[in-house]
Image (tube, rainbow, N blue to C red; front, side):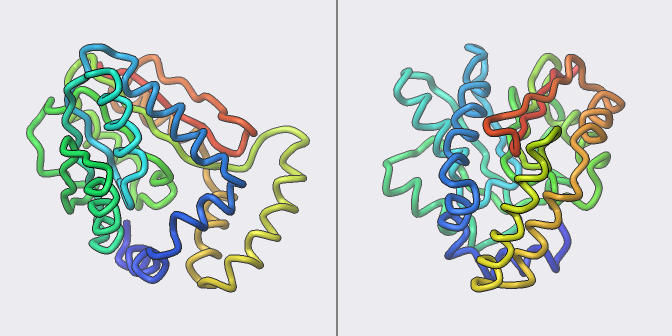
Length: 229
């Protein structure tokens, strides 16, 4: 993430969660729920890294699901933005979660040892990465052989629904301008421009097998998942 984008998130961090819910009409919670279930579907998964964890919703969701299942896991919630992480830490503290450690870090240059994590997850981060191939290489390095990567993000849906989506996004841009024009112009334009097929291809190129892309209702969100060879 560039420093410019990091500063944009600093400006909107207090409104980030509520704007996410508004823009997705509340379905972002369902999207994250799907990613949480995937993360815990492997009974051997005990060490997770959440890249670009932001305000912590995905990490918190995974932690709460693990608590309900009496699963012992540890989660490293990594982000570059101090303000976003501060909100995440506060939310986790209120919920009594002790399995998450928030750590400042760069997705393109992680400080963890090779083959350290069972699973890597992220939500709404891919569009903010300056170099996805470098990220794929770094993900391959820190995930153990046989471990998994689960990446949730947004892109323009395929088929006729993309026309309805385009009209809807025009409305969202108008609303976003009331909060922060530059920030929400970036967020909406990055969704419109994102190439999820290229991302999946770069994961395959850099050592991930069984890479699959799953559209998540109502089609604007997707999850790319794969296994580290």
